[in-house]
Length: 239
Image (cartoon, rainbow, N blue to C red):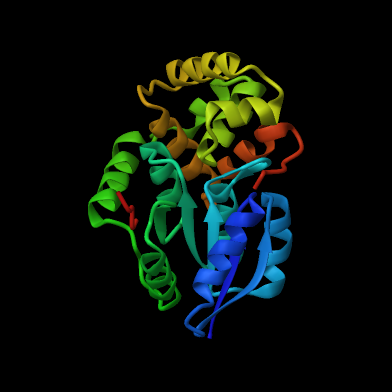
């Protein structure tokens, strides 16, 4: 029996996906949540084989949940199920360790097959999309992590949220800033780091986040810079 956890802020969507997945009898939904916080609390307890995560949530994103859950329980396969065909979000999902990035327009049986494939240890990611991520990592990875020190505390907070896959609007809601203000902050971040694209800045933060604790200590410096306390918030692409 394949154990699945559902995360979506719409109860009707969760109910529909649950009914669809359990139709053939080999999949059971063992838990669900409507917010990122609730998912992070419940997933470790129910130990699903696959987590189907909504891309955008009132308090964060499924990509953020994917990153945190995969860092603790790497055996859980994650599928980002979203309404948004967004290259940056796809990129962030791959970096976060998702096994698939699927649009909600997907046919029902294809979603069922996707869950089964991921439960079996497979990846639904398009090899071309994965190759693009590897190229972005190569081009965008900084030689000198000390460049992070050029950023103000607010710029660092925003950069971390960008790496978690949040849009400017979501970041504004999280930090109580106007969307235009967030955009201006990101322009400053790109200029200070010498990047041209938002995705390069996201990779910069993601790679520092993933540095082992036994390393040079840069990861801890970046972690502390996130909010001054050391706390982090912490494809198959169907076209």
